[in-house]
Image (cartoon, rainbow, N blue to C red; front, top):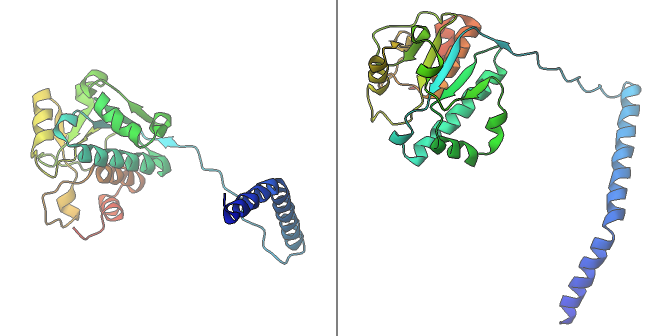
Length: 238
């Protein structure tokens, strides 16, 4: 080894040998800083830090949401990843909402499970979210189901207690127009649409992302006002 290489090795060894002392020194500095800060707070020089407020217990609404994930075969990997991101946003909105809705992901197959796992396994610990292999027709009474479809002639004026609203879990850039409406009709399930056109000016066909639909419904539960719900979720730029 050359002189420079030997010097570098010795330097690294000395640095590593002194590591316990450096850690202890830093701990003592931190301890001293905390003590000084406490003294300043006691003397009234500094304001005490605000106390952390505990988040109130989640209140669940008597209205259910189903996310129908039976369309995996109609999406490319990039679209499946996009749907995964939208579901994460749904969970986040539900977790922080004053009034949350029980959320069930149905027809949760192996393909989509792999997509969820790629982003980390934390989804398995989500509260108030169920992942079901079965279809919603196997889990709920048909008379209590309403499939949300932009093509429906029925407009939702308010969310009914005891009802389960189904959101089609698909990201397709409008390739499959009328897909959810057709599926619900074949299954003998009622369909309805959110009153988008009454409150939003949208140049394109009135189709929103999965998380936008979910967030709008969460906001309606909070305000009981569609205009407020739409405006808080969808800025007027579409």
